[in-house]
Image (cartoon, rainbow, N blue to C red; front, side):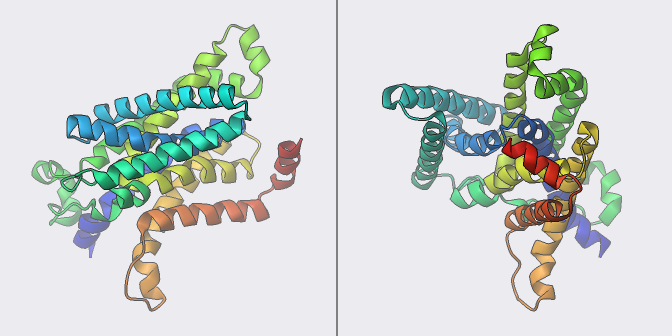
Amino acid sequence: MGAEFVQFSLTPILIGTFAAIACALPGNFLILRRQALIGDAISHVVLPGIVVAFLLTGTVAALPMLLGAGGAALVAVVLIEAIRRVGRIEPGAAMGVVFTALFAGGVLLLEQSDTSRVHLDVEHALMGNLETLIWLRAGDGWASLADPVALAHLPDELPRMAVAAALIAALTVIFWRPLKLSTFDEGFARAIGLPVSAIGLGLVIAAAVAAVAAFDAVGSIIVIAMFICPPAAARLMTNSLARQVWLSVGFATLSAVAGYVLAGYGPLWLGFDNAVSAAGMIATVSGVILGLACLFGPHRRRVGVAAGA
């Protein structure tokens, strides 16, 4: 039983957990800045950039993907500004049009491109490929964690997501005070000389790094859910930023672990024959956690009043 778990479940759970944490950490500050939909926007914009980067380089390595996503984000900013100025429409409407159009364009590029030799198609763009990220060389179970030969055959997505999560966690700790000041009192942050605009841009870049790193493994559904649901649920549970961040990490981890387990075993427990999408179930669990926080969170009324002010 232990060997089967290590082979078939350990690495997908770890990858999903690291992806959830990497997205939840910047999501806390995006929500507090009332920019929660930036995570949604990033997950839509990165798709055409990733596809174009793959078509140009023939690889799904992290650097080309990040450069492609950055280029797509730049195109999105230019298009939004052009539509806003030429059409004289509200910025939110311009953003919605551009993000939807870019995502649809990315889907069309995927359908017309030969991506059969890599895990890059419409289904993987939406749902990821967590179920396939297994560790077949871990035949000795937990003992494989000390076997260099077995460790050399870990799925590539695991170290990539571990590095991304560790990097974003480290940046959150290093820039904690500037992030906190610029988020809660932008005027005071400017008065003491903090580069507020640069901090905001850095936060968006961190969110983009998390989204690009997670995109191939977990797909856009989990990326969108993890940017919003764990931080929002944590916000309803506490008024302390430090506690909120820790709670969001806990909720993200719980969503990843419980979602993956329920995706594989939940239908069997209910008498069905087939498992369901791990990405879909992880996002569903995160939504359930947010729903419970909305119903029973101690600060739900205060947050609601603040949000409506």
